[in-house]
Every structure is written in structure tokens, then in C-alpha cells.
Length: 177
Image 1 (cartoon, one colour):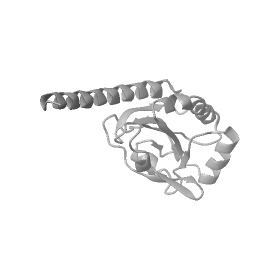
Image 2 (image 1 turned 90 degrees about the vertical axis):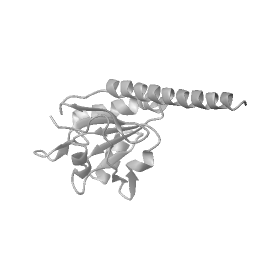
Image 3 (image 1 turned 30 degrees about the vertical axis):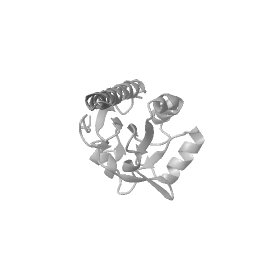
Image 4 (image 1 turned 60 degrees about the horizontal axis):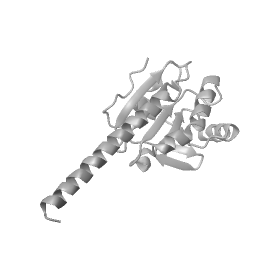
């Protein structure tokens, strides 16, 4: 299996086609958790089930303020037809040219086959890998690991927010306000 980026690594920024005439950059999603779902190919049975599942649990991802994007080496026109056919409500990004360049940066490219691994990444608000997983290519990894990671990201964010509020309250107390 691939040697994918591990937790703590900074996710490399990228810009990929989201439609035949529009791009999306990872940096545009900073400030919120991001789920990157690399998958081998549109129209394959396991990929279809995986993307349909993510579409179904999209409200759960959104409860955590998270954005999900699917990424494969398929072209933007293929993604557009696939997303329309499957009524997907999240973007599919085309890592088409140069083929698999972004997947390679994440360690999620299958060189012998020319497709992406079935790899998942949850990035925190700062663009660091919080959780990553590479599933066997013929196995749908489900959404449980993603949801658990989002829970942890939310807890971490809450703890940071509480520390900031506590520090701010202490500073006001010491200044006599």
C-alpha cells in the first residue's frame, strides 16, 4: 500500500479543475476542516458506492463545518457527467494533467495503474493532516474514520477556543475590569 501523508504533515496546496472552466484551490478551503477523498475512477462500482455514501452523510460532515472534495485522475467532463448522474452535492476535482500530480504529492498515486489510491485525508483548519487512511483499492473505506476524525478536530478546536476565552477572562480580571 501507498506511503501517504501522515498526521502532522502540512498538506501541499494545489489547484485543480472542478468543472471544465473552473478551478478550486485547497487554500480557498482554509479556515475549516477539509476532507480529501482520493479514489481510483468515476463509474467503477466501489467508487460509486463510496461517493454515494459521502453524499448521504454530507450533512454530518457539514455539522463539523467540513468541506469534502473527491479527487481522481478522471477529466473534468467525466466528473461533471458522473456527479450529475449520481446527484452528488460536493465537488469532484480532476487530477488529470499532469496526470496524478496532486495524488503523487499526497503519496496517493498508483504508478503501475495510473490511478489514485483509495486514500482519505482530514485536514484541520490550518491545512495540516489531522488523520489519513489508505484503504485497499477494492474496499469502500466508509465514513466512520472521517467522522471520528472530525469529532476530534471539533474537540481540539473547542479546547483551543476555551483556552483563549479563559485567558481573555483572566486578563480582564487582572486588569480590574
